Amino acid sequence: MQYGTTSTPPDPNAAPTADHGRHAKHALVDSEPGLPAPVLAAAAGARKAMLVPVITALTIGAVFVAVYLAAFHAPSARHQPLGIAASDKVAARTELALNNAAPDGYTFYRYTDAEAARQAVTHDKVPAALVDDGHGMRVLVAGAQGPSTVSTLVTAVTAAAGKPVPVKDVLPLAAGDSRGLSVFYAAFGVVLAGFLFAVSSYQIAPRLRLAVRVVSMLVFAAASGVMVALIAHTALDALPASFAVVAVVVGLLAWASAAAAGLLLRLFGPLGMPVASVVLLILGNATSGGILPATYLPAWLSPLASFMPPAAAVRGLRGAAYFHDTHLAGAMLTLAAWGLGCLALQYVLDRVAARRKPVEAQTASFAAAVR
Image 1 (spheres, rainbow, N blue to C red):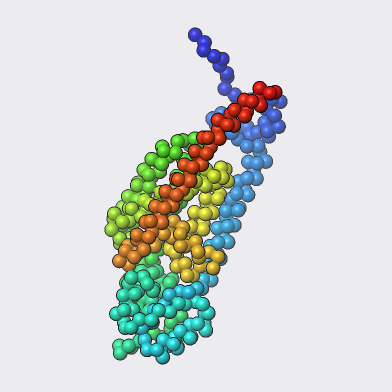
Image 2: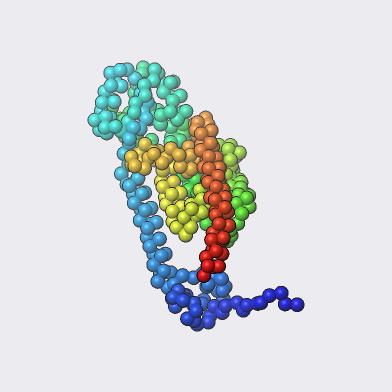
């Protein structure tokens, strides 16, 4: 029994006819035998297929080079915290010398003695402190801040003192994290994975219900947290926080990144992928603080470090690994807010679109009847 008419699938190798319109004259042909018909049907014209990838890739590359070179080609301190536990005379002389060398470069915190300065360094209140007491002048540093941060501060303090100053590392890096970059690489990789998850999810199923997409996202986030914890914590000992903390923070970062990328794809359509690349992969990772703290970023870039997901994850993981869980709670709240906020906005967009669809259908039906 025949319930309706059947149509023959279009032949992807057939020559375009006049009915296909102007677009078909420039449509791509099956130059690679075996390409599915839906892929060919959605193909852009030859000119668009040639120019759009070039423009997109060049734009993203130019933004990447510009942002990273602007941030790291010649970093200089801006309101960098520095502790001082010394007499008023020594403190005033040091502050004057540093201010003359770099106006607005440092913010000074006075401490009563060496122990107070050490506590400030080990709890991430200041990355270094100049101490001058009965045991002589020395610089207390937290090696866990990373060699780049420590070396720039030691160089500045030594120049201000006018003589070599002994350095004491009161919070060294873990053996598996000798350069202090493990947290940056972990965060970068997870943000990249979250971006790719969102892109592949929308490419495979652009009309998937949000509830199903959220379940898939949560599975991805949980698996990411466990995977990174197994690699960075258990296998390499590169993140000396507990396994559970690493898994939770990384999982939240994966969730926030995937949700943010998904929202941008939902908002901007085809432009969502380059927009998400710039926002998450370039601006997010450049301001994460994994290479240098935000106080060494340009003034136009450093504000992003206070709320972007990669920066929150880096603060949380570094605080949990070295600084007595400093910044951990705030980082988890920031990441959770990103995930929940992006999903809530996407839910609102879907609801608005669902209400608009019947109205548009009625309008189209009325217009067809009038014609």
